[in-house]
Image (cartoon, rainbow, N blue to C red; front, side):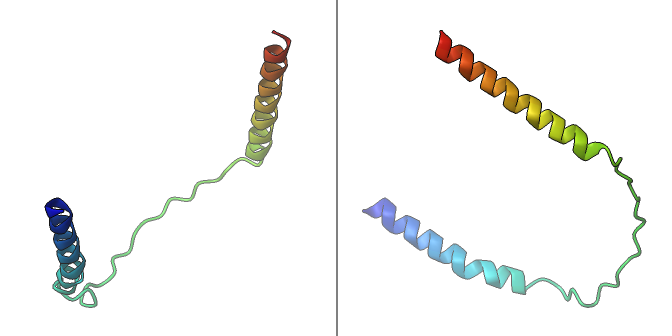
Length: 72
């Protein structure tokens, strides 16, 4: 019972202190946004077809393994 009581006390303290710790942070509004460089990445149009092929091959292998297991 004592361990449970200490656990509850610690959990309540953490729950009460967490918002207070967040509230003590300095003003976030005073920070000016900094421009960030972005890199554009183009995806090949055949990427979806490759993924679909891998899914179909995987499903066929799973089916083949199930058939072999039933036959054994």
